[in-house]
Image (cartoon, rainbow, N blue to C red):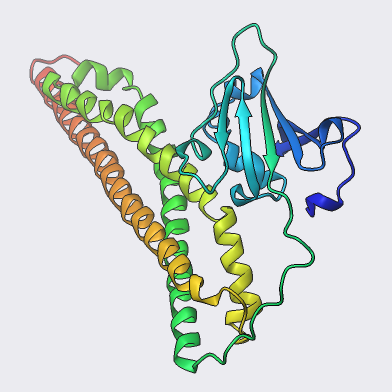
Length: 301
């Protein structure tokens, strides 16, 4: 949204995630044209997965604002500077309110808009074709990594379901009677690793899901569509290579992390399945041996 053109709120507006209200926003409280207030209900922090998405950066993104637009923000008695100052709190999950407090309230103050009488910018010089090709190549490399990351996310969604099912699986009555103790112990040991692997899967799925919605990424996508692809020179072009390189490295790190987690979880699931197959095979063999022995003695089941 264009914040300066928005009228002051007359009531709280809902911010939703997957159709469910998780927070609310009030624009320009008390007539302040550069302020807005978020409030997050106590129950939102109790929704699995949502508590990790409740960050100042994501709340701003939900109303089409970037952290670069912020001059300062406040949470309770703690005040924080805007994006121009180093501040790791932007992406940290917000703390839930005290048990007897209904909402967590965040106050945000935006930077004033640039002066309309700003001096005219110098003409943008002609850009060599090689530079356009370099910028387009970097963006395409980012898209390729994002496709890899999304593929890893889908694979880990499947692994997550399979590991959760494997962790809940119980032995049949016959398997409980005839399974070897050593096989049961090996199967239980393999299943116990799910407890340590699942949080890594959930954390990667969360990071991969939010990666495409970052304001910095949306900004570069607009630059690519409006300027780089049609090869239209634009002000501030000298900063774009560094921004693309930063996003590219971020995607490389996320892709490498996802690959490692996917391999680990595939190994965990493979060990569980292998241990269970061994257990089943030995239990079936033991059943056959007992039946054969019983027949020899003239006993029948």
